[in-house]
Length: 157
Image (cartoon, rainbow, N blue to C red):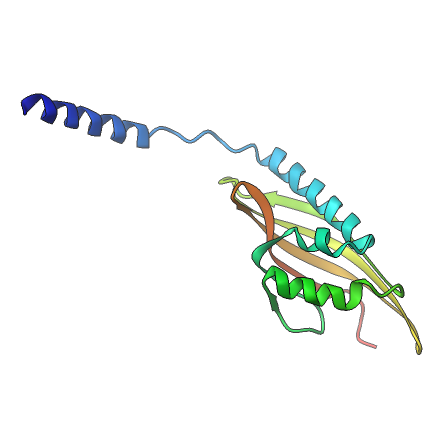
């Protein structure tokens, strides 16, 4: 009985020591580079109007806050919204990340960038340019967009 108690106490001391061990630092520059690459590929999917690829960058419960529309919650709602305009041959959209900042914890980051949107209508062309922010989160080891919001830089007509 005494041996078991000593073994148990020794094990508890080892667990306590291990829990105090420093966590290796996160290479935030490498994580930022990875997000820049994800953003670049996401943009390619949007330009190609590849709905499956474009929506795959969102977390299952991600949110999209597009201009002139309600908040969309969940990848499926985002996919349905995207299907509503992405397949229109008269619409083009692109974006580019300017800044990516990764938290020192390595599990959350934000991306800030600019976008361009153009659409041909019966009344004439509509063009917009603006800025956006995407909040990224590591979900099961992969970066996923949990919030994407954009707004125009142009004055109201």
